[in-house]
Length: 342
Image 1: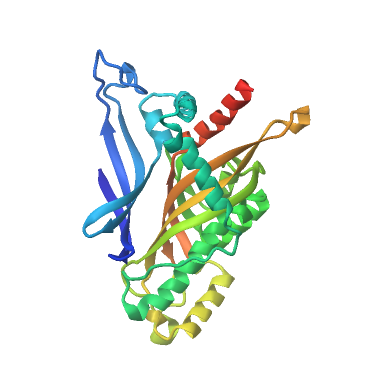
Image 2 (image 1 turned 90 degrees about the vertical axis):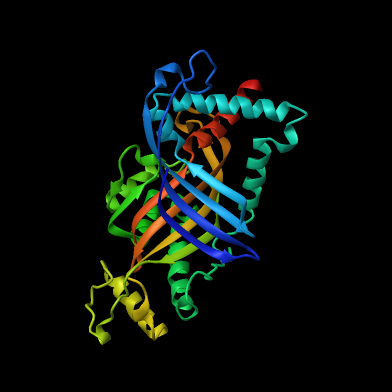
């Protein structure tokens, strides 16, 4: 386990928050003669490396709450296991727990239903986003909040209701947030990262609530952390280069001017910074082929994700987003099982 990047903020009253981007490498050793569940004997000796992001809340030196997401899709694929079979088995187990009188009150499906209702309660774009800046020097907090608020708002526009409306809308939002040569990794990108606007826009076609398959989409940014990087930017009035902050478009120049007019100490901003976001996306995925006359079925989906955005200027230069796509598919299978029962 290697923590490649960590961010943090908060205080002991509300809790210290830390977000850890972790590269996890493992070797599976099968215990012969035993039931090892999802991993067969053929997986013995196989290795896997996946991304994990852990968001910890700490009080009085102890972790009191933790949100952990990992790329199970990549894990199962590398260990030679069918992730589709795993998703189906999870769906069956969740359904059994729902029917079990001793487990139904605390079962996973109840938690998913509660999260769906919680996030649906947010009316975009009216969600009030408060970013804790206790980890940043007081004199630099206002301009760092200005940047973080902008990046978080645009991130929500890409992956939330506005971006899911159509491919054209998604593309427009991507080009406002990401650098033209930004790198992107997520469970959608298999074993390689994507680079540049064209490849990023293609994500819309296979995203669970993209490709015009999403209905009543809502998104909650549950926590945001901004972590200044290294080195300070230099503005032209102080002898710096105009392009010192990697401005790729005309609108970035206007944002640069606005920043300098708003903050007299903007030359103290760091050249790079990281924004960590824990977020929840919900909506209904449309099922059924209307061209064949199939009735439209709406399947509720809850996606819990965490993202580490490496930024320069007003752009994301690298985005590593982690969520469990196997768990998302399991939710779709739950709905299919219900229809089959009916």
